[in-house]
Length: 204
Image (cartoon, rainbow, N blue to C red; front, side, top):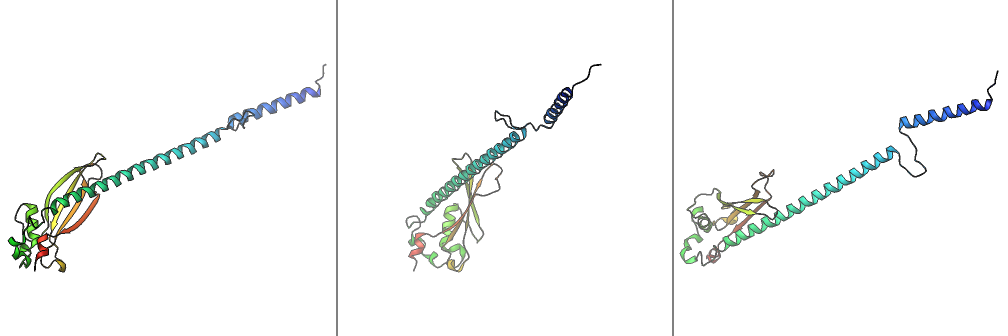
């Protein structure tokens, strides 16, 4: 009866151990880096996640920068629109347009409706406006370089402050609002100023 040599037992034992170890590594996805410098599955996943996060943050930063630039441009344009309208209004406040000789009585008005502020308000409105209530001029429309259209609301009021006891100052409130889009109800600019005709400075 032939006998099995001890060396053969050792060979089968080594082969069985190596086979089970290889199967366990494949089943658990823990194959180590090879001599050629390959990456494990976990390293690849981490690299993908880091790259995705970096790209997302970079894109978000670009979007925010573009929005801020667009907003800044719109504000600059809104200020230019208002200044242009104010210059047109001021051209109607000169002594040529409102000579003192024809409106001497307005230097010492008895009521708010007999001062220079009321005269300017009537000229801008193209009508006889009375009382201290605010008066809304027809809105203006302006196109921005950003592709949006904006409405410029203009409201006239005669201030009731002690400094305006003789009703010479006329207040103008500007509000610039987009005509469409998600920000329809959100005004991008509010601006208030006061004007006075040149004739009022000539009063004694």
